[in-house]
Length: 215
Image (cartoon, rainbow, N blue to C red):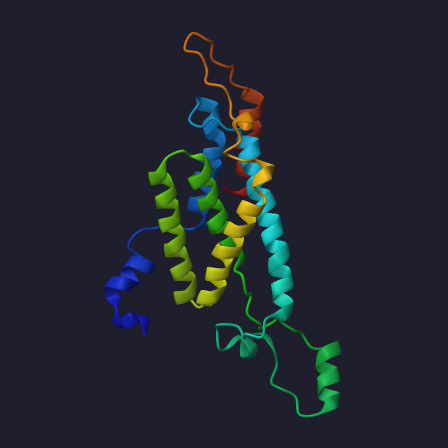
């Protein structure tokens, strides 16, 4: 049992707090960082490659749902979501047409959360230009993947495949906004040039949206 290793449990479950919102906040900060010349890339370009990677990864994930034979990691899934197994054909028909049914109890192979974790880390490691930021992001991904397994939300193979598949899609879709393409990089601002005016309407719109979605 995981409880037999309190130090490991403290490192994985508690100890230091990081979740998907932490990685997403770091990614959003990366997309906003061109505003103060922290990276020579477009925030929209980085976000485009991120969303493109998530879209194709989830397409592959949907296909994977249909071919997995693994049960849900939580052993009592069926009991929580379905009535007792019927004895007769008529009872099967009655349950199918009239009884309340829950969600499926198959394993969601290729974790959706894991795909988002990995995409955030890939974006930070690719565009931030700072190796330490990338390592921190991947450390957070490692911790979150372990926590998903410990909490029995996913199997370890789900998290492993999520990271691997997302990384492969990220490389495959690099043409969306290739960090190595000198043509996409912004030219360095001259020290004597004036600062760009702050678009107050855009800032106000972003703040309003964040308040509406409850962030």
